[in-house]
Amino acid sequence: DLRVDEHPAPIAELKRILVLSQLYFGKTRPEDLLPIQGALAREIQVLIQRAGVYTGPINGEYDEATRSALSRLIHTENLEMREQSDPHIDRVALEYLRERFGS
Image 1 (cartoon, rainbow, N blue to C red):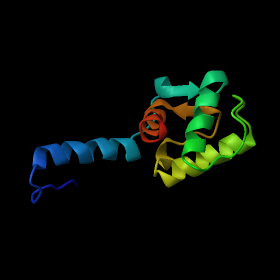
Image 2: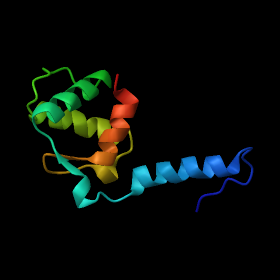
Image 3: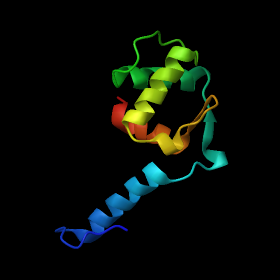
Image 4: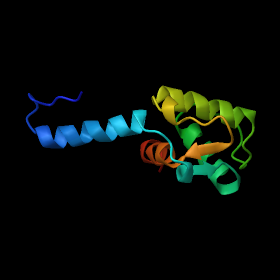
């Protein structure tokens, strides 16, 4: 139930809220699962380092320190519904993290 009755620009606000709702509560589609390895693992290490949750090396290895830091960041950003238990990342979550913590 999304309401924007009192907002000065209700249509734009409704669109913004709908996008956030889909981000936070949308289900991951199988085709949006990206394996975390090599260049993507390195990029994720840079993003989590910029977010201040990772101090390890930027080496492209999806090790326990990287996995743990990514999980902390996903939870901090309220993306729990998009978190993966295997070495994959949801494309939608990755795009959000790129926008928020990228260069």
